[in-house]
Image (tube, rainbow, N blue to C red; front, side, top):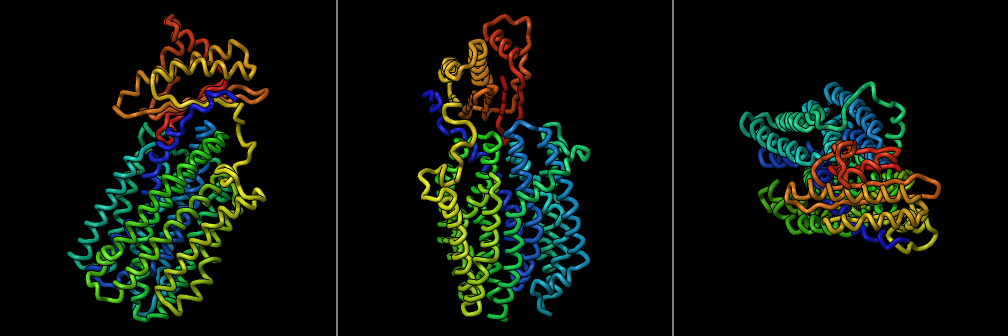
Length: 594
Protein backbone atom coordinates (compact mmCIF):
# COMPACT_ATOMS: atom_id res chain seq x y z
CA UNK A 1 0.00 0.00 0.00
CA UNK A 2 1.27 3.45 -0.90
CA UNK A 3 2.24 5.54 2.07
CA UNK A 4 0.45 8.44 0.40
CA UNK A 5 -2.85 6.77 1.13
CA UNK A 6 -2.29 7.68 4.76
CA UNK A 7 -2.26 11.41 4.05
CA UNK A 8 -6.03 11.94 4.42
CA UNK A 9 -6.26 13.38 7.91
CA UNK A 10 -10.02 13.11 8.51
CA UNK A 11 -10.42 16.83 9.20
CA UNK A 12 -12.50 17.29 6.06
CA UNK A 13 -15.20 14.86 7.19
CA UNK A 14 -15.12 16.24 10.72
CA UNK A 15 -15.58 19.76 9.36
CA UNK A 16 -18.40 18.56 7.11
CA UNK A 17 -20.08 16.86 10.06
CA UNK A 18 -20.21 20.13 11.99
CA UNK A 19 -21.41 21.96 8.90
CA UNK A 20 -24.32 19.54 8.51
CA UNK A 21 -25.11 19.13 12.22
CA UNK A 22 -26.86 22.47 12.95
CA UNK A 23 -29.38 21.95 10.14
CA UNK A 24 -30.11 18.40 11.33
CA UNK A 25 -30.75 19.67 14.86
CA UNK A 26 -33.00 22.39 13.49
CA UNK A 27 -34.86 19.81 11.44
CA UNK A 28 -35.66 17.86 14.60
CA UNK A 29 -36.31 20.87 16.82
CA UNK A 30 -38.61 22.34 14.15
CA UNK A 31 -41.79 20.98 15.74
CA UNK A 32 -40.59 21.02 19.34
CA UNK A 33 -39.97 24.77 19.38
CA UNK A 34 -43.59 25.54 18.55
CA UNK A 35 -44.83 23.11 21.19
CA UNK A 36 -42.54 24.72 23.76
CA UNK A 37 -43.80 28.21 22.92
CA UNK A 38 -47.41 27.03 23.10
CA UNK A 39 -46.64 25.40 26.45
CA UNK A 40 -44.96 28.48 27.91
CA UNK A 41 -47.74 30.86 26.88
CA UNK A 42 -50.47 28.36 27.74
CA UNK A 43 -49.11 27.47 31.18
CA UNK A 44 -48.48 31.08 32.18
CA UNK A 45 -51.71 32.60 30.85
CA UNK A 46 -54.16 29.68 30.92
CA UNK A 47 -52.76 27.41 33.64
CA UNK A 48 -51.79 23.73 33.85
CA UNK A 49 -55.00 22.78 31.99
CA UNK A 50 -53.45 24.14 28.77
CA UNK A 51 -50.44 21.85 29.19
CA UNK A 52 -52.81 18.92 29.67
CA UNK A 53 -54.51 19.74 26.35
CA UNK A 54 -51.17 20.02 24.56
CA UNK A 55 -50.10 16.71 26.09
CA UNK A 56 -53.28 14.98 24.96
CA UNK A 57 -52.78 16.36 21.42
CA UNK A 58 -49.16 15.18 21.19
CA UNK A 59 -49.88 11.52 20.28
CA UNK A 60 -52.02 12.64 17.31
CA UNK A 61 -49.30 15.07 16.26
CA UNK A 62 -46.75 12.25 16.39
CA UNK A 63 -48.71 10.33 13.75
CA UNK A 64 -48.05 13.11 11.23
CA UNK A 65 -44.51 13.56 12.44
CA UNK A 66 -44.15 9.86 11.61
CA UNK A 67 -45.58 10.35 8.12
CA UNK A 68 -43.17 13.21 7.52
CA UNK A 69 -40.34 11.16 8.96
CA UNK A 70 -40.95 8.27 6.53
CA UNK A 71 -40.48 10.71 3.68
CA UNK A 72 -37.73 12.93 5.04
CA UNK A 73 -35.48 10.10 6.23
CA UNK A 74 -35.89 7.97 3.11
CA UNK A 75 -35.50 10.88 0.71
CA UNK A 76 -32.40 12.12 2.57
CA UNK A 77 -30.81 8.67 2.43
CA UNK A 78 -31.63 8.12 -1.26
CA UNK A 79 -30.63 11.64 -2.31
CA UNK A 80 -27.36 11.37 -0.41
CA UNK A 81 -26.65 7.98 -2.02
CA UNK A 82 -27.37 9.29 -5.51
CA UNK A 83 -25.30 12.40 -4.83
CA UNK A 84 -22.47 10.15 -3.68
CA UNK A 85 -22.83 8.17 -6.91
CA UNK A 86 -22.95 11.41 -8.98
CA UNK A 87 -26.51 10.84 -10.26
CA UNK A 88 -28.22 14.25 -10.11
CA UNK A 89 -31.16 13.14 -12.27
CA UNK A 90 -32.22 10.46 -9.80
CA UNK A 91 -31.63 12.88 -6.92
CA UNK A 92 -34.11 15.32 -8.48
CA UNK A 93 -36.59 12.51 -9.13
CA UNK A 94 -36.56 11.56 -5.44
CA UNK A 95 -37.03 15.21 -4.48
CA UNK A 96 -40.07 15.53 -6.75
CA UNK A 97 -41.59 12.28 -5.50
CA UNK A 98 -41.06 13.31 -1.89
CA UNK A 99 -42.77 16.68 -2.32
CA UNK A 100 -45.73 15.12 -4.15
CA UNK A 101 -46.33 12.44 -1.53
CA UNK A 102 -45.85 14.92 1.31
CA UNK A 103 -48.49 17.31 0.00
CA UNK A 104 -51.00 14.50 -0.64
CA UNK A 105 -50.61 12.90 2.79
CA UNK A 106 -50.52 16.14 4.78
CA UNK A 107 -53.70 17.38 3.06
CA UNK A 108 -55.35 14.13 4.17
CA UNK A 109 -54.20 14.84 7.73
CA UNK A 110 -55.60 18.36 7.60
CA UNK A 111 -59.00 17.07 6.41
CA UNK A 112 -59.06 14.54 9.26
CA UNK A 113 -58.31 17.35 11.73
CA UNK A 114 -61.18 19.47 10.38
CA UNK A 115 -63.89 16.80 10.13
CA UNK A 116 -62.96 14.19 12.76
CA UNK A 117 -61.66 16.36 15.61
CA UNK A 118 -64.20 15.18 18.21
CA UNK A 119 -63.70 11.40 17.76
CA UNK A 120 -59.93 11.96 17.56
CA UNK A 121 -60.06 13.88 20.85
CA UNK A 122 -61.99 11.04 22.51
CA UNK A 123 -59.54 8.40 21.20
CA UNK A 124 -56.59 10.28 22.68
CA UNK A 125 -58.00 10.56 26.18
CA UNK A 126 -60.19 13.70 26.33
CA UNK A 127 -62.60 13.75 29.25
CA UNK A 128 -66.03 15.44 28.96
CA UNK A 129 -64.45 18.51 30.60
CA UNK A 130 -61.51 18.71 28.14
CA UNK A 131 -63.27 17.48 24.97
CA UNK A 132 -64.20 20.92 23.67
CA UNK A 133 -60.73 22.41 24.20
CA UNK A 134 -58.90 19.45 22.67
CA UNK A 135 -61.15 19.11 19.63
CA UNK A 136 -60.85 22.85 18.96
CA UNK A 137 -57.08 22.67 19.32
CA UNK A 138 -56.97 19.76 16.84
CA UNK A 139 -58.94 21.79 14.27
CA UNK A 140 -56.74 24.86 14.59
CA UNK A 141 -53.50 22.84 14.51
CA UNK A 142 -54.89 21.17 11.39
CA UNK A 143 -54.59 24.52 9.60
CA UNK A 144 -50.82 24.18 9.94
CA UNK A 145 -50.46 20.47 9.31
CA UNK A 146 -49.46 20.85 5.65
CA UNK A 147 -46.65 23.37 6.33
CA UNK A 148 -45.54 21.37 9.39
CA UNK A 149 -44.93 18.21 7.35
CA UNK A 150 -43.85 19.92 4.11
CA UNK A 151 -41.63 22.37 5.99
CA UNK A 152 -39.67 19.51 7.55
CA UNK A 153 -38.95 18.19 4.05
CA UNK A 154 -37.67 21.60 2.95
CA UNK A 155 -35.36 21.78 5.96
CA UNK A 156 -33.81 18.43 4.99
CA UNK A 157 -33.39 19.36 1.32
CA UNK A 158 -31.97 22.80 2.17
CA UNK A 159 -29.31 20.99 4.16
CA UNK A 160 -28.45 18.89 1.09
CA UNK A 161 -28.24 22.11 -0.92
CA UNK A 162 -25.85 23.64 1.61
CA UNK A 163 -28.42 26.32 2.51
CA UNK A 164 -28.13 26.08 6.28
CA UNK A 165 -28.42 29.85 6.67
CA UNK A 166 -31.88 29.81 5.10
CA UNK A 167 -32.87 27.01 7.50
CA UNK A 168 -31.86 29.19 10.44
CA UNK A 169 -33.77 32.16 9.02
CA UNK A 170 -36.94 30.11 8.43
CA UNK A 171 -36.77 28.69 11.95
CA UNK A 172 -36.16 32.16 13.36
CA UNK A 173 -39.23 33.44 11.50
CA UNK A 174 -41.30 30.60 12.96
CA UNK A 175 -40.03 31.28 16.48
CA UNK A 176 -40.66 35.03 16.42
CA UNK A 177 -44.03 34.70 14.68
CA UNK A 178 -45.29 32.09 17.11
CA UNK A 179 -44.26 34.11 20.18
CA UNK A 180 -45.90 37.28 18.86
CA UNK A 181 -49.06 35.54 17.64
CA UNK A 182 -49.42 33.41 20.78
CA UNK A 183 -49.22 36.48 22.98
CA UNK A 184 -51.61 38.41 20.73
CA UNK A 185 -54.25 35.69 20.45
CA UNK A 186 -54.03 34.50 24.09
CA UNK A 187 -53.00 37.51 26.19
CA UNK A 188 -54.52 40.35 24.15
CA UNK A 189 -57.71 39.14 22.48
CA UNK A 190 -58.29 36.24 24.92
CA UNK A 191 -58.86 33.39 22.44
CA UNK A 192 -57.66 30.79 24.95
CA UNK A 193 -56.44 27.39 23.74
CA UNK A 194 -57.89 28.15 20.29
CA UNK A 195 -55.44 31.04 19.96
CA UNK A 196 -52.48 28.76 20.69
CA UNK A 197 -53.45 26.45 17.82
CA UNK A 198 -54.04 29.26 15.31
CA UNK A 199 -50.76 31.00 16.20
CA UNK A 200 -48.73 27.82 15.77
CA UNK A 201 -50.32 27.04 12.41
CA UNK A 202 -49.73 30.55 11.02
CA UNK A 203 -46.09 30.52 12.15
CA UNK A 204 -45.57 27.18 10.39
CA UNK A 205 -46.94 28.60 7.14
CA UNK A 206 -44.56 31.55 7.32
CA UNK A 207 -41.57 29.32 8.06
CA UNK A 208 -42.39 26.94 5.20
CA UNK A 209 -42.72 29.81 2.71
CA UNK A 210 -39.36 31.27 3.70
CA UNK A 211 -37.59 27.92 3.44
CA UNK A 212 -39.38 26.50 0.42
CA UNK A 213 -39.04 29.61 -1.73
CA UNK A 214 -35.37 28.73 -2.33
CA UNK A 215 -36.38 25.85 -4.59
CA UNK A 216 -38.04 28.33 -6.96
CA UNK A 217 -34.72 30.12 -7.55
CA UNK A 218 -32.07 29.40 -10.19
CA UNK A 219 -29.53 28.53 -7.45
CA UNK A 220 -31.38 25.36 -6.47
CA UNK A 221 -29.94 22.18 -7.95
CA UNK A 222 -33.03 20.25 -6.79
CA UNK A 223 -35.92 21.16 -9.08
CA UNK A 224 -39.48 19.89 -8.84
CA UNK A 225 -40.75 18.11 -11.93
CA UNK A 226 -43.92 16.05 -11.85
CA UNK A 227 -42.94 14.45 -15.16
CA UNK A 228 -39.54 13.52 -13.74
CA UNK A 229 -40.96 11.48 -10.86
CA UNK A 230 -39.91 7.84 -10.78
CA UNK A 231 -42.85 6.24 -9.03
CA UNK A 232 -40.98 2.97 -8.62
CA UNK A 233 -38.79 4.75 -6.04
CA UNK A 234 -41.82 4.80 -3.71
CA UNK A 235 -41.20 1.28 -2.43
CA UNK A 236 -37.55 2.09 -1.74
CA UNK A 237 -38.60 5.16 0.23
CA UNK A 238 -41.09 3.17 2.28
CA UNK A 239 -38.55 0.43 2.94
CA UNK A 240 -35.99 2.93 4.25
CA UNK A 241 -38.35 5.32 6.04
CA UNK A 242 -40.88 3.06 7.74
CA UNK A 243 -38.51 1.76 10.46
CA UNK A 244 -37.81 5.32 11.60
CA UNK A 245 -41.45 6.32 11.38
CA UNK A 246 -42.50 3.21 13.26
CA UNK A 247 -41.00 4.75 16.39
CA UNK A 248 -43.36 7.72 16.11
CA UNK A 249 -46.42 5.58 15.37
CA UNK A 250 -45.69 3.26 18.27
CA UNK A 251 -44.79 6.19 20.53
CA UNK A 252 -48.15 7.73 19.62
CA UNK A 253 -49.90 4.57 20.84
CA UNK A 254 -47.66 4.44 23.89
CA UNK A 255 -48.32 8.12 24.65
CA UNK A 256 -52.07 7.63 24.54
CA UNK A 257 -51.85 4.65 26.91
CA UNK A 258 -49.51 6.44 29.32
CA UNK A 259 -51.73 9.56 29.36
CA UNK A 260 -54.71 7.41 30.32
CA UNK A 261 -52.67 5.65 33.04
CA UNK A 262 -51.52 9.00 34.42
CA UNK A 263 -55.07 10.38 34.34
CA UNK A 264 -56.28 7.32 36.28
CA UNK A 265 -53.46 7.72 38.81
CA UNK A 266 -54.20 11.44 39.23
CA UNK A 267 -57.69 12.56 38.08
CA UNK A 268 -56.71 16.20 38.68
CA UNK A 269 -54.57 15.89 35.48
CA UNK A 270 -51.54 17.36 37.31
CA UNK A 271 -49.51 14.28 36.39
CA UNK A 272 -50.50 14.62 32.72
CA UNK A 273 -49.52 18.31 32.80
CA UNK A 274 -46.10 17.52 34.32
CA UNK A 275 -45.32 14.81 31.77
CA UNK A 276 -46.59 17.07 28.96
CA UNK A 277 -44.08 19.70 30.08
CA UNK A 278 -41.41 16.99 30.27
CA UNK A 279 -42.24 15.85 26.72
CA UNK A 280 -42.00 19.39 25.33
CA UNK A 281 -38.61 20.06 26.93
CA UNK A 282 -37.12 16.64 26.19
CA UNK A 283 -38.09 17.05 22.53
CA UNK A 284 -35.98 20.21 22.41
CA UNK A 285 -32.93 18.75 24.16
CA UNK A 286 -33.03 15.34 22.49
CA UNK A 287 -32.83 17.08 19.11
CA UNK A 288 -29.11 17.54 19.86
CA UNK A 289 -28.40 13.80 20.12
CA UNK A 290 -30.82 12.90 17.37
CA UNK A 291 -29.31 15.65 15.21
CA UNK A 292 -25.88 14.09 15.76
CA UNK A 293 -27.35 10.76 14.64
CA UNK A 294 -29.08 12.28 11.61
CA UNK A 295 -25.91 14.09 10.51
CA UNK A 296 -24.06 10.80 10.79
CA UNK A 297 -26.75 9.09 8.73
CA UNK A 298 -26.56 11.74 6.02
CA UNK A 299 -22.78 11.61 5.68
CA UNK A 300 -22.74 7.82 5.91
CA UNK A 301 -25.29 7.65 3.09
CA UNK A 302 -23.00 9.72 0.87
CA UNK A 303 -20.00 7.53 1.75
CA UNK A 304 -22.09 4.40 1.20
CA UNK A 305 -23.03 5.65 -2.27
CA UNK A 306 -19.33 6.18 -2.98
CA UNK A 307 -18.52 2.71 -1.56
CA UNK A 308 -16.05 4.37 0.80
CA UNK A 309 -15.86 2.22 3.91
CA UNK A 310 -12.89 4.11 5.36
CA UNK A 311 -14.81 7.40 5.32
CA UNK A 312 -17.84 5.69 6.86
CA UNK A 313 -15.65 4.63 9.78
CA UNK A 314 -14.25 8.16 10.04
CA UNK A 315 -17.77 9.61 10.19
CA UNK A 316 -18.80 7.22 12.94
CA UNK A 317 -15.64 8.00 14.91
CA UNK A 318 -16.60 11.69 14.83
CA UNK A 319 -20.17 10.84 15.89
CA UNK A 320 -19.10 8.69 18.85
CA UNK A 321 -16.50 11.17 20.09
CA UNK A 322 -17.34 14.79 19.33
CA UNK A 323 -21.03 14.09 18.85
CA UNK A 324 -21.25 12.28 22.18
CA UNK A 325 -19.51 15.16 23.97
CA UNK A 326 -22.09 17.61 22.58
CA UNK A 327 -24.93 15.36 23.72
CA UNK A 328 -23.50 14.97 27.21
CA UNK A 329 -23.25 18.76 27.37
CA UNK A 330 -26.94 19.09 26.55
CA UNK A 331 -27.75 16.45 29.18
CA UNK A 332 -25.78 18.29 31.88
CA UNK A 333 -27.48 21.59 31.05
CA UNK A 334 -30.94 20.02 31.23
CA UNK A 335 -30.14 18.35 34.58
CA UNK A 336 -28.65 21.43 36.22
CA UNK A 337 -31.32 23.84 34.96
CA UNK A 338 -34.33 21.59 35.63
CA UNK A 339 -35.62 23.95 38.33
CA UNK A 340 -35.25 26.99 36.09
CA UNK A 341 -36.99 25.27 33.15
CA UNK A 342 -39.90 24.12 35.31
CA UNK A 343 -40.19 27.67 36.66
CA UNK A 344 -40.72 28.99 33.14
CA UNK A 345 -43.98 27.03 33.01
CA UNK A 346 -45.04 27.05 36.66
CA UNK A 347 -43.90 30.13 38.59
CA UNK A 348 -44.97 28.80 41.99
CA UNK A 349 -42.22 26.35 43.07
CA UNK A 350 -44.36 25.06 45.95
CA UNK A 351 -46.91 23.40 43.64
CA UNK A 352 -47.02 19.67 42.95
CA UNK A 353 -46.88 20.15 39.19
CA UNK A 354 -43.60 22.08 39.58
CA UNK A 355 -42.04 19.35 41.76
CA UNK A 356 -43.09 16.55 39.44
CA UNK A 357 -41.82 18.42 36.39
CA UNK A 358 -38.35 18.95 37.94
CA UNK A 359 -38.11 15.28 38.89
CA UNK A 360 -39.11 14.09 35.41
CA UNK A 361 -36.67 16.47 33.71
CA UNK A 362 -33.71 15.15 35.71
CA UNK A 363 -34.51 11.56 34.80
CA UNK A 364 -34.94 12.71 31.20
CA UNK A 365 -31.52 14.38 31.21
CA UNK A 366 -29.83 11.04 31.95
CA UNK A 367 -31.98 9.30 29.36
CA UNK A 368 -30.73 11.69 26.66
CA UNK A 369 -27.33 9.95 26.50
CA UNK A 370 -28.84 6.50 25.95
CA UNK A 371 -31.30 8.00 23.46
CA UNK A 372 -28.41 9.45 21.41
CA UNK A 373 -26.52 6.13 21.30
CA UNK A 374 -29.67 4.30 20.22
CA UNK A 375 -30.43 6.93 17.57
CA UNK A 376 -26.89 6.81 16.17
CA UNK A 377 -27.02 3.05 15.62
CA UNK A 378 -30.57 3.16 14.26
CA UNK A 379 -29.80 5.98 11.80
CA UNK A 380 -26.56 4.36 10.70
CA UNK A 381 -28.22 1.00 10.05
CA UNK A 382 -30.88 2.83 8.02
CA UNK A 383 -28.20 4.42 5.86
CA UNK A 384 -26.61 1.08 4.99
CA UNK A 385 -29.86 -0.80 4.47
CA UNK A 386 -29.96 -3.01 7.61
CA UNK A 387 -33.74 -2.78 7.95
CA UNK A 388 -34.24 -5.82 10.20
CA UNK A 389 -32.27 -4.42 13.15
CA UNK A 390 -33.78 -0.95 12.61
CA UNK A 391 -37.28 -2.42 12.76
CA UNK A 392 -36.40 -4.32 15.92
CA UNK A 393 -35.01 -1.18 17.58
CA UNK A 394 -38.12 0.79 16.57
CA UNK A 395 -40.45 -1.83 18.06
CA UNK A 396 -38.41 -1.94 21.26
CA UNK A 397 -38.37 1.85 21.63
CA UNK A 398 -42.03 2.31 20.79
CA UNK A 399 -43.68 -0.60 22.57
CA UNK A 400 -41.74 -3.74 23.48
CA UNK A 401 -39.21 -2.25 25.90
CA UNK A 402 -41.24 0.63 27.32
CA UNK A 403 -44.87 -0.48 27.47
CA UNK A 404 -44.46 -3.45 29.85
CA UNK A 405 -42.36 -1.34 32.23
CA UNK A 406 -44.85 1.53 32.04
CA UNK A 407 -47.84 -0.72 32.66
CA UNK A 408 -46.09 -2.04 35.76
CA UNK A 409 -44.78 1.24 37.23
CA UNK A 410 -47.12 4.10 36.23
CA UNK A 411 -50.28 2.85 38.03
CA UNK A 412 -48.22 2.59 41.25
CA UNK A 413 -45.78 5.51 40.92
CA UNK A 414 -47.34 8.03 38.52
CA UNK A 415 -44.87 10.52 37.06
CA UNK A 416 -41.88 8.84 38.72
CA UNK A 417 -42.83 5.51 37.15
CA UNK A 418 -43.22 7.18 33.75
CA UNK A 419 -39.79 8.84 33.98
CA UNK A 420 -38.12 5.57 35.02
CA UNK A 421 -39.85 3.82 32.13
CA UNK A 422 -38.39 6.19 29.54
CA UNK A 423 -34.90 5.95 31.04
CA UNK A 424 -34.94 2.15 31.14
CA UNK A 425 -36.42 1.91 27.64
CA UNK A 426 -33.72 4.12 26.12
CA UNK A 427 -30.98 2.11 27.85
CA UNK A 428 -32.35 -1.18 26.49
CA UNK A 429 -32.55 0.15 22.91
CA UNK A 430 -29.02 1.64 23.15
CA UNK A 431 -27.64 -1.85 23.81
CA UNK A 432 -29.07 -3.17 20.53
CA UNK A 433 -26.27 -1.72 18.37
CA UNK A 434 -23.36 -3.35 20.22
CA UNK A 435 -25.25 -6.62 20.64
CA UNK A 436 -26.04 -6.69 16.90
CA UNK A 437 -22.34 -6.18 16.07
CA UNK A 438 -21.36 -9.13 18.29
CA UNK A 439 -23.98 -11.32 16.62
CA UNK A 440 -22.96 -10.10 13.14
CA UNK A 441 -19.30 -11.11 13.60
CA UNK A 442 -20.06 -14.03 15.95
CA UNK A 443 -17.32 -12.70 18.21
CA UNK A 444 -16.33 -9.50 19.99
CA UNK A 445 -15.57 -6.76 17.39
CA UNK A 446 -11.92 -5.65 17.31
CA UNK A 447 -12.21 -2.17 15.75
CA UNK A 448 -14.69 0.65 15.21
CA UNK A 449 -15.29 -0.47 11.62
CA UNK A 450 -16.30 -3.86 13.02
CA UNK A 451 -18.51 -2.34 15.74
CA UNK A 452 -20.43 -0.58 12.93
CA UNK A 453 -20.40 -3.83 10.90
CA UNK A 454 -18.59 -2.64 7.76
CA UNK A 455 -17.62 -5.77 5.78
CA UNK A 456 -13.89 -6.12 5.13
CA UNK A 457 -14.48 -6.30 1.37
CA UNK A 458 -16.76 -3.25 1.16
CA UNK A 459 -15.56 -0.68 -1.41
CA UNK A 460 -11.93 -0.35 -2.43
CA UNK A 461 -9.20 -2.13 -0.48
CA UNK A 462 -6.38 -0.05 0.99
CA UNK A 463 -4.02 -0.91 -1.87
CA UNK A 464 -6.68 0.03 -4.44
CA UNK A 465 -7.09 3.64 -3.32
CA UNK A 466 -5.11 6.78 -2.72
CA UNK A 467 -6.35 9.51 -0.35
CA UNK A 468 -4.91 12.90 0.47
CA UNK A 469 -5.99 16.01 2.36
CA UNK A 470 -4.63 19.23 0.87
CA UNK A 471 -4.42 22.43 2.90
CA UNK A 472 -1.72 24.48 1.12
CA UNK A 473 0.11 25.14 -2.15
CA UNK A 474 2.93 22.91 -0.91
CA UNK A 475 0.53 19.99 -0.42
CA UNK A 476 -0.90 20.52 -3.91
CA UNK A 477 2.54 20.72 -5.50
CA UNK A 478 3.43 17.30 -4.06
CA UNK A 479 0.23 15.55 -5.17
CA UNK A 480 1.36 14.84 -8.77
CA UNK A 481 4.24 12.58 -7.82
CA UNK A 482 2.16 10.69 -5.26
CA UNK A 483 -0.73 10.09 -7.69
CA UNK A 484 1.67 9.13 -10.49
CA UNK A 485 3.39 6.58 -8.24
CA UNK A 486 0.04 5.15 -7.16
CA UNK A 487 -1.18 4.80 -10.76
CA UNK A 488 2.02 3.19 -11.98
CA UNK A 489 2.02 0.87 -8.99
CA UNK A 490 -1.44 -0.26 -10.03
CA UNK A 491 -0.21 -1.09 -13.55
CA UNK A 492 -1.89 1.90 -15.24
CA UNK A 493 -0.15 2.94 -18.49
CA UNK A 494 2.31 5.84 -18.38
CA UNK A 495 0.25 8.34 -20.43
CA UNK A 496 -2.87 7.93 -18.31
CA UNK A 497 -0.87 8.04 -15.06
CA UNK A 498 1.16 11.11 -16.14
CA UNK A 499 -1.81 13.15 -17.41
CA UNK A 500 -3.98 12.24 -14.42
CA UNK A 501 -1.29 13.23 -11.93
CA UNK A 502 -0.48 16.58 -13.57
CA UNK A 503 -4.11 17.54 -14.12
CA UNK A 504 -4.99 16.71 -10.53
CA UNK A 505 -2.15 18.90 -9.31
CA UNK A 506 -3.20 21.84 -11.49
CA UNK A 507 -6.83 21.55 -10.45
CA UNK A 508 -5.86 21.60 -6.77
CA UNK A 509 -3.48 24.53 -7.29
CA UNK A 510 -6.26 26.40 -9.09
CA UNK A 511 -8.73 25.83 -6.28
CA UNK A 512 -6.23 27.07 -3.69
CA UNK A 513 -5.21 30.18 -5.66
CA UNK A 514 -8.72 31.14 -6.77
CA UNK A 515 -10.87 30.33 -3.78
CA UNK A 516 -9.01 29.47 -0.58
CA UNK A 517 -8.62 33.16 0.26
CA UNK A 518 -12.03 34.28 -1.03
CA UNK A 519 -13.75 34.25 2.38
CA UNK A 520 -10.79 34.30 4.82
CA UNK A 521 -11.73 30.86 6.18
CA UNK A 522 -9.67 27.70 6.42
CA UNK A 523 -10.41 25.25 3.63
CA UNK A 524 -9.48 21.72 2.64
CA UNK A 525 -9.33 19.75 -0.59
CA UNK A 526 -9.94 16.03 -0.28
CA UNK A 527 -8.54 13.91 -3.11
CA UNK A 528 -9.38 10.28 -3.73
CA UNK A 529 -8.16 8.02 -6.54
CA UNK A 530 -9.53 4.48 -6.82
CA UNK A 531 -8.47 1.71 -9.16
CA UNK A 532 -9.74 -1.84 -8.96
CA UNK A 533 -8.50 -4.69 -11.11
CA UNK A 534 -9.62 -4.46 -14.77
CA UNK A 535 -11.65 -1.31 -14.08
CA UNK A 536 -11.37 2.38 -14.92
CA UNK A 537 -9.61 4.88 -12.69
CA UNK A 538 -12.03 6.89 -10.54
CA UNK A 539 -10.88 10.27 -9.22
CA UNK A 540 -12.77 12.67 -6.97
CA UNK A 541 -11.87 16.17 -5.78
CA UNK A 542 -13.92 17.66 -2.97
CA UNK A 543 -13.49 21.13 -1.51
CA UNK A 544 -15.43 23.21 1.00
CA UNK A 545 -14.98 26.56 -0.76
CA UNK A 546 -17.71 28.62 -2.42
CA UNK A 547 -19.79 26.78 -5.07
CA UNK A 548 -17.85 26.41 -8.30
CA UNK A 549 -17.82 24.07 -11.30
CA UNK A 550 -14.35 23.04 -12.47
CA UNK A 551 -15.78 21.82 -15.78
CA UNK A 552 -16.64 25.39 -16.70
CA UNK A 553 -13.04 26.62 -16.51
CA UNK A 554 -11.97 28.08 -19.82
CA UNK A 555 -8.55 26.43 -19.75
CA UNK A 556 -10.16 23.00 -19.97
CA UNK A 557 -10.94 23.52 -23.62
CA UNK A 558 -9.07 26.70 -24.56
CA UNK A 559 -7.03 25.78 -27.69
CA UNK A 560 -5.09 29.07 -27.63
CA UNK A 561 -3.60 28.66 -24.16
CA UNK A 562 -0.18 27.00 -24.53
CA UNK A 563 0.84 27.22 -20.88
CA UNK A 564 2.02 23.96 -19.27
CA UNK A 565 -0.99 24.08 -16.95
CA UNK A 566 -3.52 24.29 -19.79
CA UNK A 567 -1.76 21.65 -21.88
CA UNK A 568 -1.74 19.11 -19.03
CA UNK A 569 -5.43 19.67 -18.27
CA UNK A 570 -6.41 19.49 -21.96
CA UNK A 571 -4.44 16.26 -22.39
CA UNK A 572 -6.16 14.88 -19.32
CA UNK A 573 -9.63 15.90 -20.55
CA UNK A 574 -8.83 14.18 -23.82
CA UNK A 575 -8.54 10.76 -22.15
CA UNK A 576 -11.38 10.97 -19.62
CA UNK A 577 -14.54 8.94 -20.17
CA UNK A 578 -16.87 10.86 -17.89
CA UNK A 579 -16.86 13.94 -15.65
CA UNK A 580 -19.46 15.07 -13.17
CA UNK A 581 -19.82 18.08 -10.89
CA UNK A 582 -22.36 18.58 -8.15
CA UNK A 583 -22.83 20.64 -5.04
CA UNK A 584 -23.60 18.18 -2.23
CA UNK A 585 -24.08 19.31 1.39
CA UNK A 586 -22.43 22.62 0.45
CA UNK A 587 -19.35 20.76 -0.81
CA UNK A 588 -18.01 20.99 -4.38
CA UNK A 589 -17.63 17.45 -5.71
CA UNK A 590 -15.83 16.93 -9.04
CA UNK A 591 -15.57 13.30 -10.17
CA UNK A 592 -13.71 11.92 -13.16
CA UNK A 593 -13.61 8.44 -14.69
CA UNK A 594 -10.49 7.75 -16.78
